[in-house]
Length: 503
Image 1 (cartoon, rainbow, N blue to C red):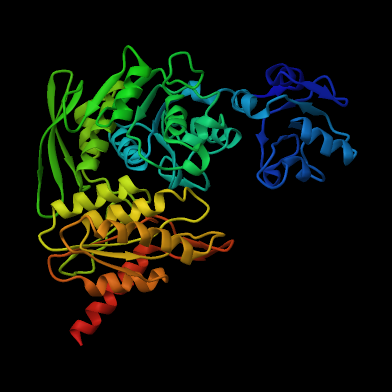
Image 2: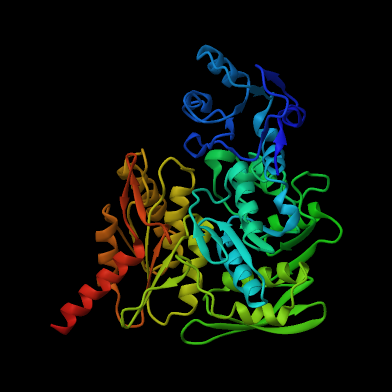
């Protein structure tokens, strides 16, 4: 598994600058200069602040793939190694990376899931169900990468093309037959998934997010649609689409003939029947597939998780799974930081969830409220250096449903945390004039103190949700990632309350 320099020039539609030996070839490619090995191909891409070519000097790379700007940097540094100059490096990086690693996705059943919310949960359900069927499975997504259950450190929801193809090769070498992965809009727009053969592509839903990158909802939608358009080189072989929102129905039209439609609320080729929920939030429902009804049990609470489970089963069935065996495997799945219960013996519900956009906040609150006899409180904030237009919408979404809204910090990054909170508070205060249930709205910048306040507020039968960070274990402030895990802070606050009550 390797690619020669001449093949590289052809694939990149570029030109070779500098001399190279006739048999020069590469079996490894990376755009991270710290991961280069002897003989590696260094993909030097333009970055937000620094061009990757600035990091080429002194590395063990055998050759460098870059663009015109990168080549100028290398010339100025008197680079002597072969340089392949591509007119549009991002447009070809996926195909080149796949070729370097021997097109590993062709040896796997790759099941991709895109959409705004539900990608992580759906992929976790897919992983569990496929393992229950006896398959060896790789998983790639927001919470990291796993190969046969063993964690492999990765940073992005969908890794850059060289790392993605390298992971696929590792999975093949470890005996995996299936890979389930989240496909982000960034990955589609930036070509990270180019060169990957997807057996099935699934769509969850679409709501406002990432408008700092895509500018408008239409641009955001078009990025997702690139995974389904007939004729798109990124298109999966089969499409399975949740059609419970207008965006899903548009995706189903774009995907065309052979698309499997799924609905948790209406008619579709795969549809959900009556849902029964017990006091602990466990759910059971009928799922109609190909004229047959299957009983699905689910440990995850919330109507949106019924939708996620229905989509997961439909994707698996489309990929050839045995629905009964698959469904048995998802019955007790829990997902880190997704509607994750924190139980220290308290007499109220405490949940940590990753919801960090308006629609997701509303969905989580509605699901918890539907299963709670008492009041519902929420701790939430908004991230810095991201779509600022969703901040007041998040405050409003919380006030529309919750009885207690505590606005706090959530990864302010390089921005002034007080200004971010102010925007969330503005939306919350404006919404107060339109609701009838008289919620209380407070602001506590220190996230740990906000969690303590929410725990102290709760009474028997109530529920509190700490939203926004989910599985994350850090708080990004002014370029520094401070250790912070919502789940641990909730546990600590619950234990402290219990100790005082027992004293």
